[in-house]
Length: 318
Length: 320
Image 1 (tube, chains in turn blue, purple):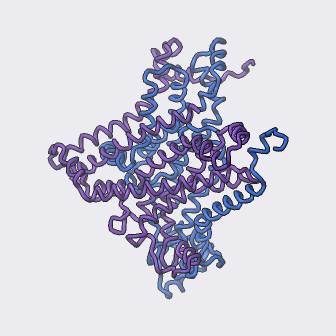
Image 2 (cartoon, chains in turn cyan, green):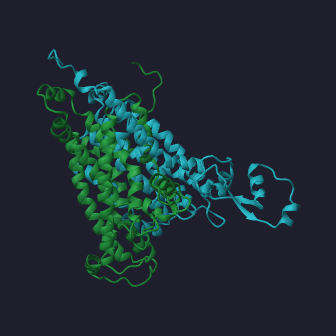
């Protein structure tokens, strides 16, 4: 500075001490905010007595009981009956026998998890297809009232889900769509399509028009140019949008708890009602929660570069 | 660029799968009709699943309809429901609970989020990795995670009470987060802040990074103090981003349902009964469909107004 020449480095680059302080605070925040998640992971491997001990146990004998309980239903048996049984086969059966129980059958977790997968992927696929088409339309053509239409599309996502659920409930009852996967796929598609249009419009806006125009000069039709020129360029944007839609549909609870009860119920309304003997079976709940969250963790890492864009409907781009 | 194996184009596929008149016209469409071909499916879906039900709700809000008695005679009650909502102390209590929740989550998340973004922007080694870790809570299902917080908040065995007791020295069974009238509203604010501070931080971080270095350099040349630089450069330039985050969190928390429903279900009593929980109780427990439709319409209008402001804010940020 004594020379009077201000370089970018001398002013903008924070000092070493500032960096250390910042790093300490940020890492402290990260560690504290991870405690609840770490606790979910740990609780999944505890036995029920360990999970409710005081003081809370960090070191314990890990067991698969929570995961076994998550996937099975068990029934308590008398000692006489237990004595007549052949030796237990499999880890879960052994764990159940140790608690004087036998496995009565599979629980509903697996079907609910499958429902979540089918509904999340189905609705994501539909929302991305519709969203890509609409986004291209808005991006490349002079649509009358385009701004109003785009606002209308966005505002549908802002509606309180419970308020939307009342008429949907009545409508689905009339149409026979209550508690069906198709009904949920349609509903999630309609919620996600708004995000898809807004995000994809941003991505498609970034693709130079000249590419398609050149293709059309070469004799491509508009659809051909869209298919062969625009779509390949928009792959990253489409993938990022799809993951956002997938996460929304995967996490959604309000519609699911009000509009599904059996057949089409997804995992989020199911996990909280996992109960064991004498109250909530927390290790099983934690196991179910862990399995449910793992895909999202993977997707978050994949998405990290597009996160900002996704959560602001494309308004903020890095 | 010679194509050796021609892939059938979308147009060709549409043409081969469509009636003749569509195929004939697919190549010769005006730009406006092509635009509508692209946009119409989305609009039709939204009309069917959002707008048609919305109109239905408005219609029901003027009737005595009850969804659990579909065959009862449908009577018009005029604007009675709207009048009784505006005079209903329970509804006002719910609006107050909602306001308390919205205001405090916004205040805490903005302050914490700003601090977090500011420190991440010091660009220490490994900041990208730690940022990704910090962002994890906001990607998770509020319902599933909120449900687990019920366990963390258990007065005797919960980890939260244990840690608070460990740090502060009060006995862990001396307070109940979700069981006491005084602390329950804070229990939901805390979980929401835990989940969504990263969201606010990420948006503010983008704002901080959008400020060009040369502005600070110029300020440095003018010998402006760091404090002065913060108030005259950093804060004003980040403000649109803060507004964006605040509006978005405001809208989201105004309609908050999942996390609160699982954590406290509106209790104890109705201390944490935010608007959406009241709506659910009226609509799906008491089955007062007409009354709850009127309440839904009022919430719609409020959110619609907020969304309007939100989109204007979005456009302002985008122009930057």
